[in-house]
Image 1 (cartoon, one colour):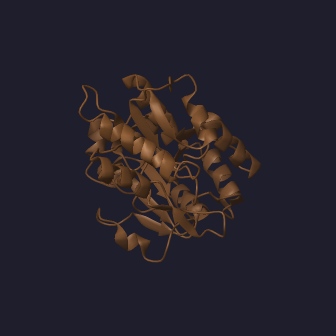
Image 2: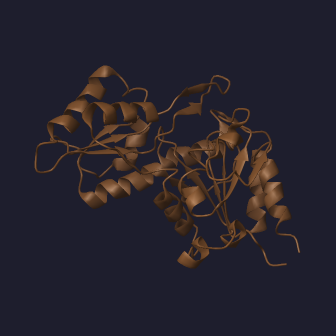
Image 3: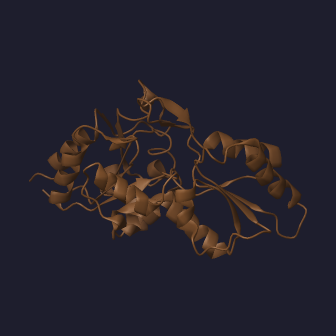
Length: 281
């Protein structure tokens, strides 16, 4: 039997760890996946930390990871800002701002970048972003609003309780300014395509139009049925596996609007076991 899984995209927060605790069994599950030889990438919307910091954190939790195996929405956002020659006002935590080193950030700003940033989500900073957006609308080059992602909530470090994500703050700026945000991270189709390319996999148009999901051979694993498994993951025909950890709540799989996820599992380890079973001759 020919291998059916060609690559695996893995969400990070809530899927392999919550705050400073690895999900039980996740470290050994990643070792099993690596030993199988199946390419994988951590595909994360984490916006509070730089990619280097995230890699060091995962290593500290016991995961055998390399920096190049982590594909972040912050990296994709930097590419967008640089390609457009923007000077962003960053609503990001200081560590995450390191991803934008070398990008001009002096006033006058001509864009607003919003990630998950508790230190930025206060009236003074949000109003500064609002004024930049609304006051530039009548100029020759209106300011651009960029959302690293629009997650509604995330599993926080106080026992996995849900906390507000950046989505509500992005939509507040959209509502008040009348400017629609350009969303960069999951679940945008372009983000998944870039992550697949980053694995070195040729994801051709023919494979995208495959008659069934098995034909793509690409898996996406996450704890958020909308941000991890919705949108582009469904549009590209990826195999979408939901884990009952992190921000997962009972019956979340029933909220899928793309015909149902392809599997719901207790945790990351159970998904890896399922994937490896599909590789057996």
